[in-house]
Amino acid sequence: MRSFKVIRDPEAFQLLADETRRRIIYLLRVKEMTVAQIAEELKLTPQAIYHHIRKLKDADMVEVAREERVDHFIETYYQATAEMFNLAHGEAGSAKVMEQEVREALEALGKLGLKAKVDADVVSKVVELIRCMKEPDADSPITERVNELGDVSYLGKQELLEFISLMTISDKEFEDFLKNYRELRKTLRSIVAEPIQVPAKA
Amino acid sequence: MRSFKVIRDPEAFQLLADETRRRIIYLLRVKEMTVAQIAEELKLTPQAIYHHIRKLKDADMVEVAREERVDHFIETYYQATAEMFNLAHGEAGSAKVMEQEVREALEALGKLGLKAKVDADVVSKVVELIRCMKEPDADSPITERVNELGDVSYLGKQELLEFISLMTISDKEFEDFLKNYRELRKTLRSIVAEPIQVPAKA
Image (tube, each protein chain N blue to C red):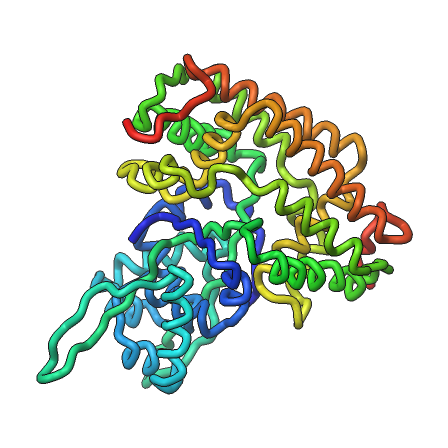
């Protein structure tokens, strides 16, 4: 199993919002399992598990580890593709999904006692800024080579990826990133009446 | 189980560098288990598992879920404290550990075909910058209240935490952050002979 994998599926965020699917992934990070074994472990029907596995497989989060012949049929063992999924934001086609995520997060501000004015303009502006701030090298060949480093720890690899990204982007890309970051803060602060203090208790 | 937990243990990074400990955490995110059950699942001795569990418990990554009386002894069931651990960098006492991490990541640049000059000065400068860039509100009361939001998804909560952090830091803190970010990039680029291109293949 790899240390990390860049997940490009625009639905990744929604796939991982489901608790059962996350539990399946945790199990498949520990060992290879069949649909029947997972179903027994999670006390769900094989049909339900199979449905989830197919979706996770389509999104490259789960893969076939091996197949075993038992009597006259074949049992398929699955495993997770990586220990950590780096979700690639900013993919073409994912704008709608991101809009939903961002809206969800912004609307939750209200539940924390902040009066936030969330409208379509604000949401699409935040989405656009986040898409622009996407790290450029998420899926470059270097990413794969970091994965293959034998003696660097799991979290060390994440740190290394960030360092490499910071070293390899151009001055212009970096300055644009900072500019977008500033703009994102400004936009977020503009939606609340009193932007500074988040109350500790509602 | 909570969505996330801020882990303040300075050893957290090292604890998670161990594959067996990560596998234990994955299992304990799926269900409550005893030391004996984990040992059987991972084909290791209960003694070895107990040793890991104690360390993970000390670091607040694992906790006792419940105790069950069986005949005349008590069985302890463990669970993970959260689905995602947010490691609090920049804690007092963790400088030494961070130095090790950063050195490991920087030295790995060489294995990717980059001639990087990594000395003690560079390592301590990078560590200092990362410590200064730590998000200020990692462990504020608001963090706990985000955790408790019922209808916000697992990854939506992470996004919300970032938004809140960005909205609540002062202008000065934000500008300092950007300054440190710039300085970090400059420092990283200074250690390689040809700072721009990371070769795609060695």
